[in-house]
Image (tube, rainbow over all chains, first blue to last red; front, side):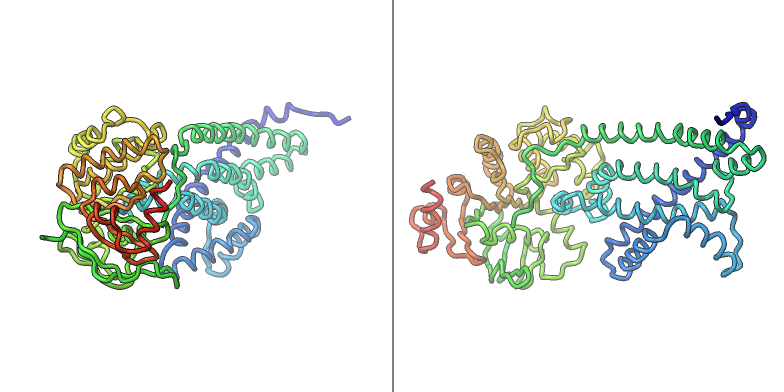
Length: 232
Length: 248
């Protein structure tokens, strides 16, 4: 029977706490950047300019297909060699994670925008609003509501994906734990704690997203007698 | 008499399908024109062309002396739409906004009214459609008839000179049709606005319209005073259509 030694954990508590903070920090920046970039890509893809929509389409295809780990290594090791441009591991991780996330956010935002029937925009246009006003005041508020459950899912996945950054020695929880293991030789205890820490961070987020979903479902009742069809 | 709407030889195609073929008519200021006809006859497309939700391929539209050919600028489109209100078959209220917010959005954004000015005016229009007590409800809490009355008030809140009503009772349960038609009757009685309405309610068209057009397959088959057209249609197709509808 394996001899558990939990004592080691309590003496290195601070390592897990600091690691978890870096994990959260990394995820936070990646989520912010990825969401902004993703939303911009969604609008580019919908653009009437064929050049813009083509660029967005290609970007989304590429970054949805490349595994995050490969992207991470590529950005951290290849870019400095090609462009003689040194970036810290943390920045490389934020860039890789947000590029990957943005491709998925773009698809979520596009789907959200398309979930709002054209008749909603038309009633705004018919009153003399510009298409920008219609997007901002009529379409987006409703679309965002439809996007939230999906986005929350993406963000939670992003937090888990941030553990990949350990491969390029970002000081997040998994990397710090690996160092700790090489010093203490207690992998079982340490990896168990890592798993528990992830659970502690993620479970509240999961419940928060479910709560959001339920709330939105209540607020967004379909309009009585309205089936969103356009007649000709 | 001065025309509020003057349409000259407009046509519109969706792909190879010709939905409007060489349509021309005039509506004098302050008059009511009803357009009737079987579904697929191009009535709704015609209304959509008038406020440029659809573009005409050919011809000319003049509204309030403002003329539109097939490539208007964005600015011209908005100037026109400010003066031309439209009410849709499916209401198209904005579900994330309350009734009063539905009414004040465009006056604030398009006409530059302050929130309080817009709200003040919106309340007057809500009262006129009999829904003053529903100002802070969300559309989903209202019946179809109430929603359509809100949609009418929303169009009126822009104080348009021309009002386009696109089968505004077709999506309603029969017992709710009356309340919406009564609102329209009151607007007609003011003689302030030029109204163009597409409808399947023949009795209503006969009541309120100064002139009726019967359309089929993208062309105007017959046009006349409601009493003449309904009592004694000149064209065989008009006769058949009216018989089918009135025998129900």
